[in-house]
Length: 344
Image (cartoon, rainbow, N blue to C red; front, side, top):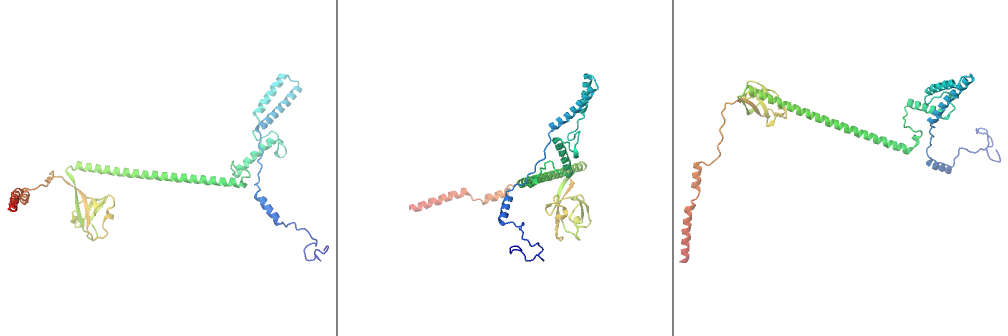
């Protein structure tokens, strides 16, 4: 206790009993000032590493070559050689050293810890190390140190990535639609080719049939079948009758082997299959239209005469018509009599 302030005894307090300043207390005003400063504080800017000057590096390497050439020249002059011989040997050494100049990023001399003592040589070596580290960690060449703290730049990059992804997605959808259209065109072409081949085959078959049987001609017949034991009593292959059951519904209706069914219940069976056109109620009769080839007897049907009035009709019409020539004098006589009565 000092001057009436503090604890009477430090026992059990865990302190030394002296009054100390609270260094952890921060006033509200200071907190507000710090928040306002943090709001306007710019993100930290990292200094980019210094780049090496290639001209200075090339100059330093050539200077090392000249230093070695000068040392050789002094050594040869001390030996008492002629000036021409000394110049020849120095030129040969210079040419040899210039060909063997160290590659960029390397140096002929090294200091402590791999440093050469030359600022540009050290910067070039550091850039080579950074490039190797980027390649090992998979860092892109467009990476800029400190760009992760720039919110505006990150937002811009995000929008660019979204736009690029959307453009790629649009291009992918257009490519898929084009492939789908191409597939549909190919299917239509194949269907058209198949129909053309079918027509050509039918035409060839027809031509062959005519060549074998020139006396045959088409004839369409309408047949009505009543099922027996839920069966029509016929067998079909691509709408061609291949077999007729004796005593069956088809045989009683007059269906023959070789007939071609063209219509079922008034619907074209070339568009829909034969079985789907049959009535679901098996008790109902089935109407078929078949095409068959019959022998041509060479007799042509006479043409029907034009509908004209016969002599009897003409006479009756003449009789029914009033005789206008006879009625006219009678009317005139009646009119004269009426005039005379009016005068009397």
